Amino acid sequence: MFGIKLENVTKRFDNVLALDRINLEIDAGEFFFLLGPSGCGKTTLLRILAGFEQPERGRVLFDARDVTDVPPHERNTGMVFQNYALWPHMTVWKNVEYGLTMRNMSQHARDQKVRRALEMVQMSGYAERSPNQLSGGQQQRVALARALVIEPGVVLLDEPLSNLDARLRLEMREQLQDLQRTLGVTMIYVTHDQKEALAMGARIAVMQMGKVAQIGTPRDVYRQPLTRFVADFIGEINLISGEIKSVEFEVVATTDVGDIRGQAGYEGVQVGDQVLCAIRPETIDFLSDENKTTDNVILGRVRRAIYLGEVEQFFVELASGDQVKLIQYGATMQHAQPGDEVRLGFSQQQVVVLRDEAEDRDEAV
Ligand code: ATP
Image (cartoon, rainbow, N blue to C red):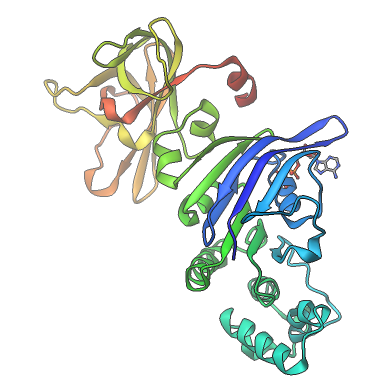
């Protein structure tokens, strides 16, 4: 297995800038996620790693080896696609064996490796079936075995679970994680599903229009988003716009619903900056006791309450006309009815103050 480095990788298709100066380092043995909306360049990046596309500028390194101009079959990458891409006329065994046959390996060595690969994905009993006699989950496991059998230095997975139903997807997530941990192989996983990336990724690169918007652990990108785009794309968020009033002891923004205290989400926060106070719905509480207070208190009226069993969602209209969403969990669930006037409280620690950028505003529409 190897580590991967991308230096200024840029790719253009006609007048579309699919990748714009991507710099990325992925450690050997890491399970790394590329996450972003449709068209942000994830697949293009994966194809550049596999060697199916050439960057217009920049370099791709596998460990210290520059592979930018190395053809796909000399890169030792294994690829798993969304639609499995198994050969329908070959049995499961032949599908998995194919990569080894191409490498002129002896029959004995091939048999051993195919057997092991099928065991790894728990498909040993299906060797003589053809792909159309398998369920989607089983086909995806065969595709994985086919990628792993060549003992690749990196496995590239392009939305590998998106054709599976929700239950199977959860099951396969766990199996993939276990397999990655056991084998210790570098894996790069492309998805537009933020829940999948949060649940599985050790590190995630959030991509936006050909650029990396943020890299971090699931916790980092969820709790400390660097931009409105990342905050919006990962999970749900309330955004209240304001202007920085003070940065002396704490960051305070003046907004239409009063002052809001928060954490600086970018460097060099200055008085007068136009900002967005980003607050996750589950970090806001109803302050039922009139006298109770916290770092931030805002007033509103409940417009809608949606009971979902383990959680209840509330939509509260503020004096500014903005709507704020709250999520309350089971045991601590507070009761409020549509029409109730409420006080909402949230701590300074839970508010990330982001720069309100015009560029981000346009894209978020
Ligand atoms: P999705 O999740 O929909 O697969 P993605 O993030 O993987 O999207 P890419 O497939 O990498 O995005 O595409 C990035 C941009 O490059 C898009 O605007 C796409 O239309 C464009 N693009 C990709 N491949 C080509 C191509 N072969 N020719 C022209 N444009 C392309």
